[in-house]
Image 1 (cartoon, protein in one colour):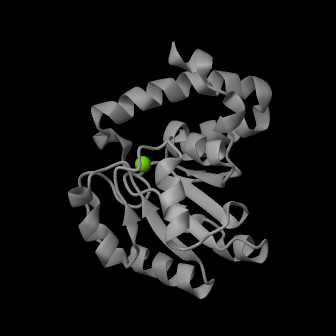
Image 2 (cartoon, rainbow, N blue to C red):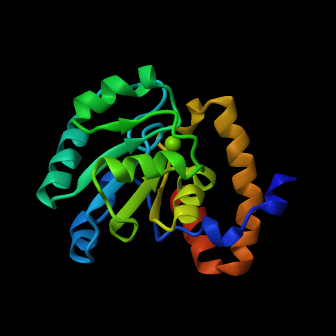
Amino acid sequence: MISMFLDPYKCIPLDVVDHVSKVDLKAYQEKGFKTLLIDVDNTLIPYDDRALKPWHEAFRKEIDTYGFNVILVSNNAQAKIEEFSNAFKAPFIHRAQKPSRRGFRRALKMVNANISETIVIGDQLMTDVYGANRLGVKSILVRPIRSKTEKWYTKLTRRLETQMLKKVKIINPEMYEKIMTVHRG
Ligand SMILES: [Mg+2]
């Protein structure tokens, strides 16, 4: 099992929320955060509906209100995220290969961001949170939007996630409970 080799401490997010739009941007701005690296699939849009919705526009406006830089960082192909990124008015990194640090590093470079002032937001423990922690970036785990339409490879990652969560339960039972109720409940 690959999970034997992975560090459960790198699976601990800063917080867990049930929807990306519920992230308290005001609070994070006050703490000195300046840049958001946001996952696309199942964090901002489901696989089967790629259209920009009114809540996206409201959330995008809120990002501007608090002065954040925003970059979409996706493991998906350019063709799958370009249209949404344009509509959301945010630059993107495609085929980021999360949990590799490379895509995140490229995103940070785009806006000259510091690691300590950046937050990664995503729906996957094993790509978004794990990748962010590998680089030393704080992360927020969100509940996936419509997980029924997940691709086969995402389902594989989720299986790994389940194994890792057993370890998280041992090292941080409070965070485990939060992930189980807010992210997976
Ligand atoms: Mg995702």
